[in-house]
Image (cartoon, rainbow over all chains, first blue to last red):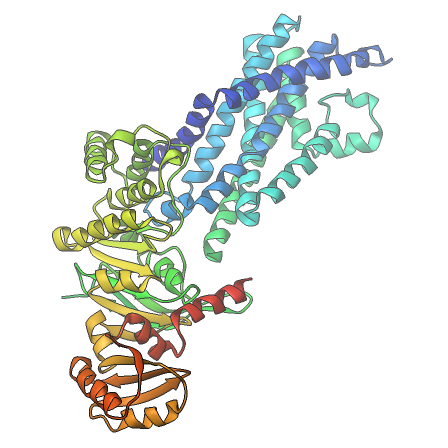
Length: 257
Length: 325
């Protein structure tokens, strides 16, 4: 209970910044819109490729954008930790009896919250643009769930890298390095049957692809429970592994002090 | 009665080979202000970090408020307040929100927390700015918020790591009053690190001078100064001619020792400087030597430091900066 309260206090710090900073809030909310419109326009021709069977371009792209934005948002989570380490907030927390997992858990929760908010926005905007949610409300909720799981995992990874590197530049580099390859090595923007075989192979091990497949199947198509179930299982495992990595990185950080 | 802080032979080396602590021991009596004095890089902050459980020592042991820092770190954390060199407040959050977060870290919640926050804001004169973001605070206000946060859970031991560094003189004096009050009225044990000699002199009832990771001298500021035995008499001669002869002249004046000549300046140690001055003046007069000034100085902590660390305080400071640079 105390652990939960303490983590929530950490999340609350992020939420306050979001709510009090009109510019920051504006960017957070505008980003999904721009992505959807931009990628939508850019990849409109995808539907013309012979062999494409994803329906309308907006139907195909919406789950991809939801997942891509989740990874991107979550990737920056560790920046808060680096600021806390440099500003002394971390020392103050570590000198108190507070639960050691609070910074990680609180920041991950905050990242998930942001992702849910952005995902809902994308889903609604896509609806306005004519998306067909074959899976209904339940399917959409599953799409948001996989985005949140993937986001939680990447938020933990970001926190782990942050406390190991303790430098903003390293984290910025890592996020920039990872985001596009992970997206391109998935079905986010392109149907898997239309990409080179090696990409298809790599994509099978790509958590971003698991989320895209599960989300697309649940929200936009006739839901394939086998596919959705296994992908959700894999994502849960990935999120747990990432949380373990963050915990170990944090322990290592404490030892290095 | 058990000491509030007890450290034995603490050692800490940071990779690759920076020795921060090299067998440091100290003992702090409860409800007193203990000063750790030393130049940058002497090991003051590392000592505080070990005692506040932020850093594990490589060897040695320490107990704070009855709990062992290695065996029972949570026991130590409950009993201590920590005000580090860095601010430690979330700049984006208001003063009130920072105090709230701090309280939650110690498991204080609800009405109790609200009451303590109101009290703390009043006590540290922050009520008017309580709902402004901490990043808009002046240096003095930020420091007061730091200390209010450090005291919110009513700790028995408070660590203050260079609490007045970067404050303007007025804010510094205000901070000194506040720190004196903590030990006198609230019976809190304060471990203060500083590299301001005057601050240690004024606040601490006991001092440890540390240099290169170990304690080189300890005692009350007064004892440490008395150890130097006497005052310094300094005479500026009108000209440097035959200054060596004048130095010999001083040697025949009773009660003076350690006579040194440095250009036109003659320096001597006197057991009782006040009594030595008439004799010095008479001796100079009798031999027709002209002096432009004669001054008397009580030993300062600077002299104490010079004696124990074998180099002047500022010199040690700049040496460290060179190493760091």
